[in-house]
Amino acid sequence: MYVIEILLKNTAMPMSVQRKTVEEATTVYEQVLAAMKSGDRNLLELSCDRQPEKKIAVMTDSIVAAQMYEKSGAAASGKTPGFVAFAAS
Image 1 (cartoon, rainbow, N blue to C red):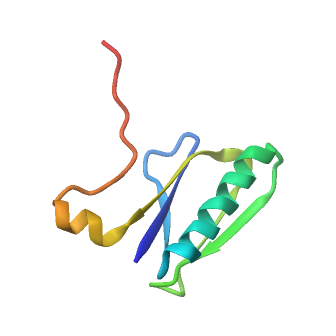
Image 2: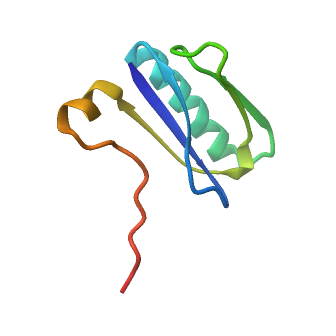
Image 3: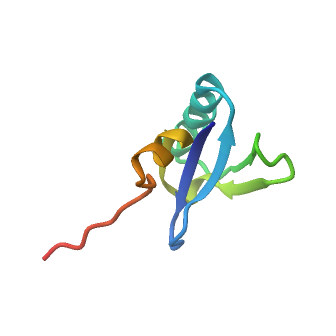
C-alpha cells in the first residue's frame, strides 16, 4: 500500500490517501504536483483505496507540500515517514 500525504497552509497534520500500486500512487502524486505548480485556485478531490468512504477535498492554492511513500516500509524500519520541520537555532 502506498500513501500520498498533503500538507496544507496553517494545518499541523497532513491529509493522506492510499493507493494499492506504485503506479496509482504516482499518478495521484503527480496530480497533486501539477495542481501545486499551476498556482490556480481549484478544488482537488481525492479518495482512498483502503477506505473507499474516506474522501478529501482541498483548495490547490493551500497545498504547501506533498510526499509519497510505501506504507510497509514504515513498519519495517519502525519509523513513520512524515513531514518534519526543524527549528533554526
